[in-house]
View 1 (cartoon, rainbow, N blue to C red):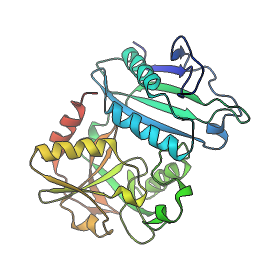
View 2: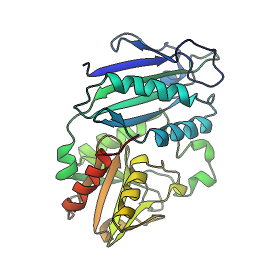
View 3: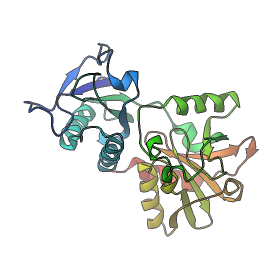
View 4: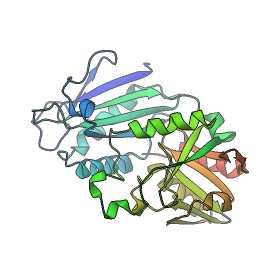
Length: 293
């Protein structure tokens, strides 16, 4: 089976023209978007990345709902979720079922001067994340440069939307590597914990799991939501809170959560070693890998 699969949506929005099929498969190496596509030239688009295990896409409805919310924040045409869902499943069906994989859904405003959005689904086998899930990550703390309540005063900054404008996130990861770290955790300019460049932050205090509140303009994590469901089944309590940076030192354990890497424990913060809860990490990752659609 191929290790890469690409499907282009024929009508990615609800108001698009009727089509005989919602997608067509395309050559991964062939040109896909126009030079004037606003997703490329302006970052005018949204995306979602889903994990795939044992031939099953995970947290499908949560990802589609988040894409719909992000599209609304950018005032994109409303995506046709049934078309996206069918396309996603078609891509997953062509990927090897015996390997972990991922599918990225990309939805843009389309070519400048046009009136039709563009959309595609790209699937590929995933790298081996076992070391991150067991040994853990070294992270550094980076200032995002905005106060934690910025969404209330500047909604046009699109905090909390998963847009294609990811240059800052990638720059943060490069800065982390310059600091001999694997990843980063953002704090607001007033020292409140936020999220990672491509992940959600999870903290454990005794029998309580906490994640920074999405009221601070951070992305609601689909993997984090599933981690909370698992934790409650294990008898832990869960909550969304506004946390000071000092909570990183006070927590019993820390994780960065994302759709493909899943739960990666944090083994150090800015060079200070942290204890890794290997037992809980193993249980949590097993539960995340076993998720169904």
